[in-house]
Image (cartoon, rainbow, N blue to C red; front, side, top):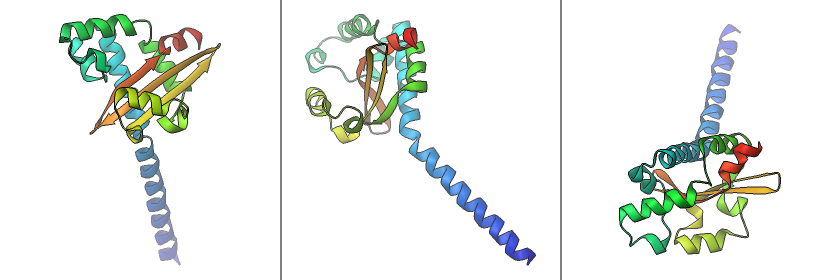
Length: 159
């Protein structure tokens, strides 16, 4: 009878380990997206052009510009949109999922505008005090890049 308890205990540990592994794997896109947003936010604050351009999908209109022009545009355009505190608020409070699940009405237009496949996109959405924060990232290979980022900084100020 002792062997049956030992076998049951081992089986229970295997099942629990498998479930934990599955849950960890399912949370990977969210964790990777938050890492990308953190790196992007800190690069924006430090004005690190190389990291900024590596972590974002540039609008088509700016793809022909010089690296200096591109980074200058990003710094000006996104300075009031994202901050480390805003990323923390998004991490703690925002809804996360596929782009089609989080922003079903906007998916087609946003993906067409950036020329990306919606199946490769994930999004965060948070609403607070009448303001809606939007973050969309696209997976390219093993990395995520920011496709859209609006009102993230305001979430830190309002949460």
